[in-house]
Image (cartoon, rainbow, N blue to C red):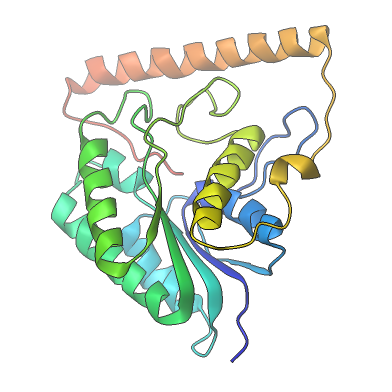
Length: 238
């Protein structure tokens, strides 16, 4: 049976879409991976998704007879920022999603969550989520792309959740490194598929915009902490 390239589940980070960065479109890291492998892409990620949404909505959308070269799962950002976070529940769901992918994909790739997540920060719960992800991956023989150290002004938006256009490409480059070390052939690097120019004025305007947005996010986070006295929070909607 012929395989259909790359299959991806997740939230808005994998769904992609957003502002241009120096004229470069914001596309899903998983789509960039497919382009790097020169393979077709099937993306089922949905903005705001949690692991329960992957199981209830994304998995059933896959054609029953379809088979893929690579299955990608990046989920957990919305789960770990929710009030009802529970590692055991998340790990069971993650395990079930990888089991589904394992039945239909030649290789599996899953992704950990950056430690510097959100404002206010998600905190120690992220380490819990990453432990669940790596444990689930080990049970299913999935490759792990470690994004625990992923952070940078030009790679992550001011909300400290969503990657920028360059951030998506950086994630894809890391993913391709993991896949290449496992024997997959990388046909082209995503960074070689983009072209952009910057000017001093444009960089200054970008820095000022980022600083303004970062101040808004930080101020809102501080206000939320005061308003709910450490007991509330909001779904990130990624």
